[in-house]
Length: 120
Image (cartoon, rainbow, N blue to C red; front, side, top):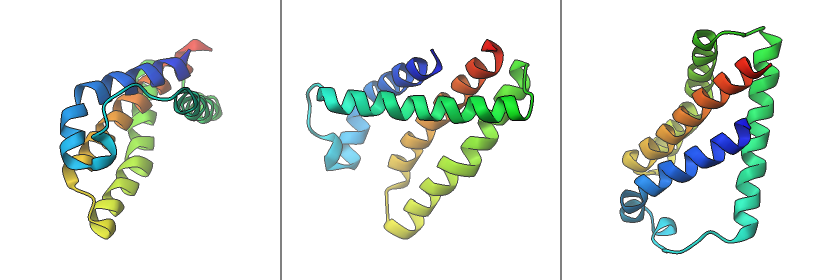
């Protein structure tokens, strides 16, 4: 369930920010539906994220939503924010593009962590 939630949230996020993305990076300029193999890859990626977050939540015994939100925020800062900041600094990725991706990861990581923490 958490993997599907992550997939749906990301799809909605990028649908909302699609025009901004297209203006920032040619890779997002193509309009059309995503090929089936990419959908499958995204679902697998979401499953991996959900499984790792579940493993972390169980390992630290997180069972309430506030602690789950805290874990989601900590993981967000430690990984996507750090990686995306590096891409802005070292690869000249536009900060607006990185911010859109960071926002997606923030929503996804917090929601997935809450789901996997409270589901058990």
